[in-house]
Length: 356
Image (cartoon, rainbow, N blue to C red; front, side):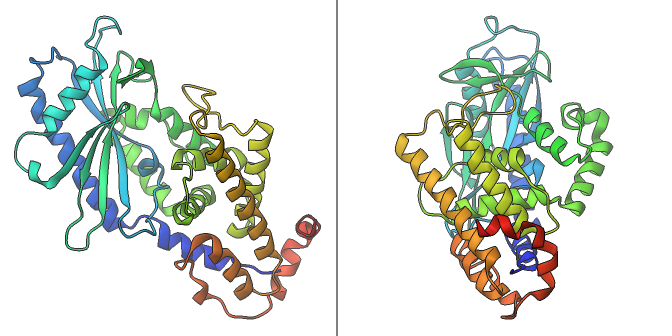
């Protein structure tokens, strides 16, 4: 049976967001933070906003599961929450749209605004798009807006659904608990007091690169390459985190995690319940039957292909099969066309399952 673990390790390095792009995203994020902070003094009286503000990165950027896209004109993104810290209840504070307008007005003024290509007001956030120049990549920063009487239970400013509790740090905590990385919510919710602890955790996370992070990246890379309307990264992260199977080899871990994910979705009536606030929310609730069917079939095809790849007698044949799911950047050049006799003993216990 073929062993493509070495190929996956190389692939992980190719799809993992490199430090140059990570740095560019961080620069734009910090620039927007400065613009919002500077605008606070000029615009807050107009909008009846006098709360203090804090900023908090969230999502795949913090968890280090963000990937390089395979598509030349695709946009990279980073989520950076703005927190208005105050004591006003939901009926006492301005409506969510007022806070959205504050953010838009703040980032639309001052030096450097010409760098911004477009500002888009979405229901859940304000999106700021930047156009890459001189061969650089395209990217955008999503700015979700929160009001927090308690930083551990903030309200999201949703333009249609009004204020409702939503804590993105819960999702980071859920994921990091699966890995047992030592992350604590206070690291970023109370950053001024725990800055050193957060930076140490961040550095340790980057060095260790847990297998589950890699599995999430592989699933995102598959979704990135696959044509059609695939689920977003948060869904891939939930599927991987909920159904992860550890193995000494990434190819086997990916296959078994995919298989578990398919069975889990079927058992849930093909729903993807959110594990954190709002707990149980089906992330497929707005999917059409056609979109669900497309993803179901695509996932099943990926699993069948992964099974074929693992059953191949040599790594080159297996690599070609994996390449069908990841595209040309899957680095088959790192393997030789030879039988992997040494891998037989390590997977013998699982061979009956693959032959079914």
